[in-house]
Image (cartoon, rainbow, N blue to C red; front, side):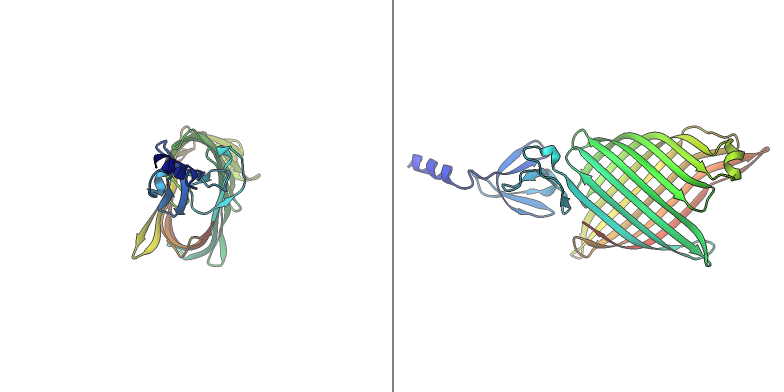
Length: 328
């Protein structure tokens, strides 16, 4: 009877199941994955009944008919299949938003603002590209016309620590300081991450290069050059946290950076620090369509010195946005 029981176990399909769960604590479960939800994963084991584990405790998984591990982000598009190489399991995600801005200033303004971000990642590497386009009018005249592009490259040493290299390019079609490039690199720490849940802190150091238009007075008067370089240090954050309210899916989010100028390049102009950040709430109609409300802050601190007189260059702007967006 004992040998018959052993033979039955060996012949059971569960024994030969190849579905695998890799846990964040280092454990590995082999069996048949029965259900995957945003909150949990249920797997039937050959030696016991099915068990359910929290999604956040799962690092990755592999299905019997899937040769590569799958990232724990919900959604996204798988780009590459790699036999036996877990590091080549790539996932592509992206999102975009069309924003209506209500700005409270001396005059009421309306503008078009489009944001987008795409990300390709595997277990070790993450490539991100985000951008923003803004066109604003005030009293029938163009008040601002600019765009920003921000490519980043992250390499993960483990589940938490990574190093980031980034470029932030801002092009302004109206100002004399028409182009600003920030080259930065530094360590980051990821507390948790999936498609809708993330908390990361990044500290970087680098250089900011400011370009002035030909024929403009500001660059030549203040710096004797049209290309100026500032050494900078920055601390940035990226936070997303979903929650349920009245059986509806919401998401609290915040993203931004604090930048410190480490030295000055002109006796006439002192640049001290900048803060750029956003805080908001998203409502998800489904897995792909969302409605967002957010507030953005741009704050700059500096001072202008000329012929013994000083003038503060502190500037702040608060914007309130209502956005309709989509993600995959």
